[in-house]
Image 1: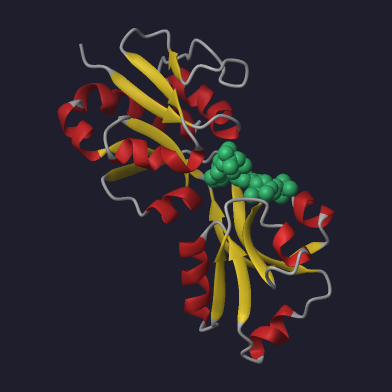
Image 2: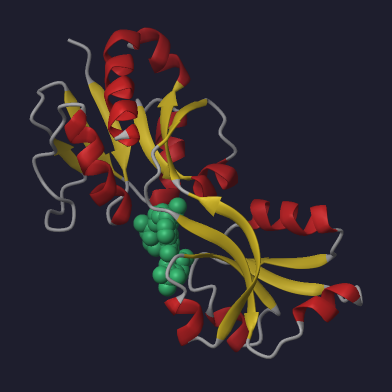
Length: 214
Ligand code: PRT
Ligand code: MG
């Protein structure tokens, strides 16, 4: 029997992946919101789900601790993608990666004048590439969460963060000044597992691909 392990994070990724798994005939036995279990059985005896931090999904799949996983484009960029095959854009957990500054901060003229911007972000690779491509010099400050606080507390001039409704920016008197890229989640597959467990993994990938297109 070939066992399959799927790495998911709880919250929007778990919730939005459920219907796609269902299309592949996979139904988790528990919801991680209400269960403390980190290993969740499914209706199929040879398929299980492991619940990890969103940013740890690529690592579990890279090392083969999970055969499949679902991770945001933001997370995959920061991870680098080593050992991963990413065949499918699942078109879920969509948002945009943006540059935001405090209301009233003249971002365009700061950039034009070549001022060295202080930028705080969890997405340091994406941020570094974005500003390097623009030829803007920045001091990059790595944060692990609550980026919105950084400009308010005087830690940074600007942040690079994900925006979906925009209400978090608004609540903190920040405005988006640049759109870096659209974000959605991808299915990632361990490259070695795809060879060894080809038949069963390809079946799951194909069923999910069909469900995404519906
Ligand atoms: O929360 P935790 O620290 O455990 O990890 P995480 O934030 O990486 O995980 P999670 O589950 O919150 O997000 C998983 C994935 O969902 C991310 O990697 C993104 O690809 C995707 N996603 C989609 C988002 C959002 N939309 C989103 N809005 N991830 C985060 N946000 C945050 C954003 O950082 C900001 O703080 O929501 C806030 C903005 O939302 P609005 O609606 O106010 O604009
Ligand atoms: Mg979060």
